[in-house]
Image (cartoon, rainbow, N blue to C red; front, side):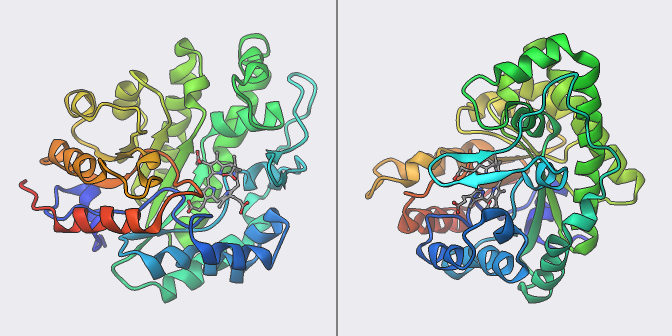
Length: 345
Ligand code: CP3
């Protein structure tokens, strides 16, 4: 049963434009630090039902949003695969790097049994959330998880991952295929627990050599969605191939996503012409425009996005996560502009 604005928008054109924000539950909200202090270890934080629920709720106290996103992290799958994932302050995530052709790829891991607090917090959140607010579950896409798992940390060029792709093709694709199963399992679990919408973050898709884009981003996404559909999970899926440029077009036609999230570098007039018209578009305000106070061109930019996307199935969002220095008043202003906008369809 599809009742709510985001789900309705994905299946039809709607007069009202829904709005939510990537990383809406993070460090730009002062109380986040109060909640975060209760558990210093970020992995343990992401496994604490009470803290997950509090953090997911937090942005709703401030903003009139159409969705909450469950508080978790894409690196909970590598953690469940025993890759020794750690989050260190001022350094970001790191883990034991996998050595292509040498490191055994953990098979038959029961991801869901390791992420029971995630499941339980979705069940509780769904009971507490107002009926019109949808809950978004998510996972990292296979390529992006493989990037972190091979490199062991973030990187400016993910050279070890790209080298593995060219030289250890069988091992590399065994890793991708294994991740496809674990990601599908995690999304299925979130959907069955009550998540209304599922999102796949492919943050490092712009690191894929162009000739491998289909094999590393599009085909794995299509396979994950096909597995979900074969398991009778029909919730809409939003794909986010960050900075994928011209490859966004093929992704929009062949990845089986119901909605494509566009990053802040995408020219929306180009997207309107070239992206598959059957699917919805989400995006793509630059999160940096929410930092200055006052932000001089904010209103004009928000209106321009809304004008270009008039007539399309469209969800308003930022083109990447809100930053810790983003201003609450700017976010409020954006929401108010979106909610007042008179759309023609
Ligand atoms: O509001 C939300 O969106 C909350 C849920 C959420 C988090 N991470 C919480 C988080 C989501 C959807 C993510 C996804 C995620 N995690 C991505 C994909 C989206 C993107 O930003 O491209 C990636 C690449 C990660 C990996 C990750 N997690 C990094 C690189 C970092 C450190 C960098 C940073 O922003 O500090 C994290 C930590 C993390 N995940 C934080 C939050 C709120 C900050 C943790 C803290 O110190 O409190």
